[in-house]
Each structure stands twice: as structure tokens, then as C-alpha cells.
Image (cartoon, helix red, strand yellow):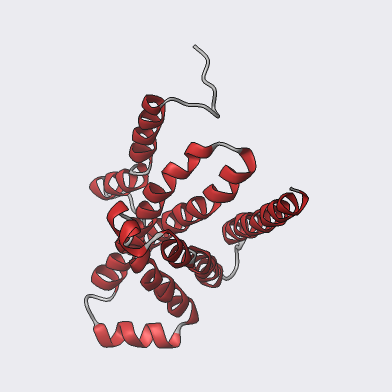
Length: 209
């Protein structure tokens, strides 16, 4: 049985979405497994913070990259995964924030506020997380109808700024070994460049019609 990747059936897309949904839970399952086996290392809180932050940025980057990849390849159904991946990014960001507030700071709100004000990487990361809230809240079909397509699309362009903030947050955090932040930054820049190329291509096509 051959699968035409450009013309997948509805049942095939639903099956693939189920697979992606389950795969997106694997990082959480690994963390829970490590915790159950007491295998989080010498600094378990830092391990959880790093893992939840890493997967937040991973899902943000994937979400942002889906649209230009869909437009470039013509695989239209890729757009149907954007909402799921975006919500998973928000989910892991909440785990990241919760770990910091509960386990790292023990609800020390004054200490948290001082961290946000004094540590640039926390300032940028916290700002990016806050900006994710309106995107998560308006991710439903109902909110899309209420806002209207144009306003909804404008609001959800915040993902460009959010993902950039996530990359900067990660880059400033690691300081020395910037291999992983560099990979995320490269994907981000490639995605933005591809959007510009597609936009220019579409303008030229309209001009020649």
C-alpha cells in the first residue's frame, strides 16, 4: 500500500495526528520515569527545568516552521498539526514555569520578581511565556470565528516574537556550549527566510497574472 503524502485521506491524517499526539507526550513520560527511578541526577530541579524548557522551544520551533514548509511543499494538511504542536509548546512552558515557581523558588514571589527584573534570560523567557497565553486561549475554532480570520492571524503572528524570545532565553542561559541554541536559532532564521521567499514569490506571481 502506497501513501501519497500530498493527498492523504482523512483517516490517514487522523491516525497520524494520534501518533504525533502520543509522541509529544514522550518527553513528559521520560521525566516521570526518571523521577520514579530517582534518575534525575545530582540536580533534579535543574534537569526538569532544562528538559521542559527544551521541549517548549522544540514545539514552538516546529509550530512556527509548519506554515512555510506547508506553503513551500504544497502539503496542505501539515497546517492541521499547527494547533496541536502550539498547545504542546504551551503545556511544556507551564510545566517549565511550574517547576521554577514551585520546586526552585518554593513560591517565593519576591524572589521570583527579583529574578525576572535582574536576570535578562529570565525576563525574556517570562515575557515569551506570557505572550503565549493569548495564543493558547484563542486556539479554538470558536475563538477564530469570534475574532475573525484576519485579526486571529495577526494575533497569532506573535509566535515569531515568542519563538525568538525562547531562542534568546536558551542562548543566554547556557552561556558556554551554544550548540543547541545555535540549532534552534538556525531553524528559526531559516523559517523566517523561507517566509520572505514565499511572500516574494507570491507577489511576483500576482504581478504576472
